[in-house]
Image (tube, rainbow over all chains, first blue to last red; front, side, top):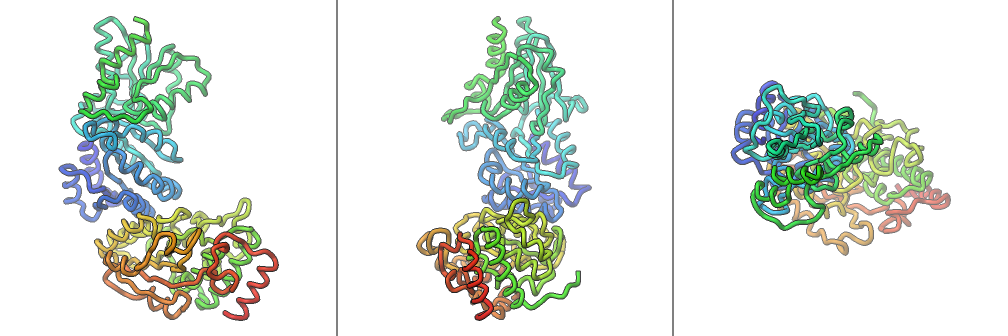
Length: 303
Length: 267
């Protein structure tokens, strides 16, 4: 997803000299082409996220469309007050781009696990949160975001995510139904969508049919009520803490709309953890890989 | 924009009086910090034409946002804010809040209040001016206690690395912060050496001498510039000078008239 993002940004910069890319000394092998082609629209801020975000706000106030590129938690937590006071308070066009959503950097440890970022970013007023499911939707989300002149957050995977969509097959910015079935509605977001699709395939072989929907924009979050109303059993799957993520948003809106549903949230426990390993390993460990998801569905359905 | 700008000294005197009235009327704080920096800001405001509404050019960022009363007062007397707006300072429904808000002040580009935000933001705008070949200095006013914030030092590193000679920062060096002196709190000295070590052009001046401030703040260099302006917190009102409580207190009726009397007599 990171390559898709930077490639698309490079394409956009060809026609837009207001695009400014700041990196927090990260992006090796990904950002060099942009830097080479648009040196006046590029800056490496060094390992200094507070200054990086404050500068981004300053550049945006000067008329640039600023993209701040870093990984995992660094462009969120280290500079959260700069995001709140410098970017959101002044209502500026700064896009925070975090590579390595969820457990992408699994073996690098908890410091690098971006698993509570949605909860934090959704609390910020005026923030738009993009959580595309694959490289194609990443490109579409980026292009679409150019007309949004307020703070934005891109929660992206790292690299090697398979394409889920074909060109034109995503319903972005709306939910996309990637599998259909009547027994349960599975709602998910971001790179883990592929696990949910595979879970649906596993279940299909056993005669269980579920619907799988991906949500590409988490803020503003809009529950697809007409869809939700069709199901009694709902499962939210996310590569994020069960506290403050998609599950929380779905729960809130289901309650606010007075819908009586059997809702389960499958994500990471709201606990510090010390597990290390590849993304694949950790997804399995926490029961959010395709097998874990399909087991959860069977439990919910009592089959 | 053409405007008749009064001299820095007359702005400063009028601003001191206004700031006293504002903090008295609103029972709001930071009069000590305001009196400390009014001379610095008056010198900047009277010698520049600040770009408005986030346009790039000569610009001012007040990082020590808590000195809002003094900042608004200077900007009003320099012609950037309607004077009558000062009357509702920090009251219910006011347009001018207790920390510098840019919302209704077109000459200010950043609302501040939490320390350590002004310099990074200004560095961003200074970079924009360099990239777009736009002239004009970025003036940033910092407090000395604010130098505790690491974000300033991050910005200091990058500003000199990029050779941002369009940055002219001033530290209001009054040696007092919230509870005690800066040196008792977290020692800042040797402060000039620290900025020198970050490869800034540094001068130390009397922060109440308009001639010295003028010479220092508007000097030219091929590096980002830091002016350490030695000041007295509460300057101009004897019983407020060098007093921690006057960081918070607002003058009552009697203190206000005493303060105004002193200002008229001595300044």
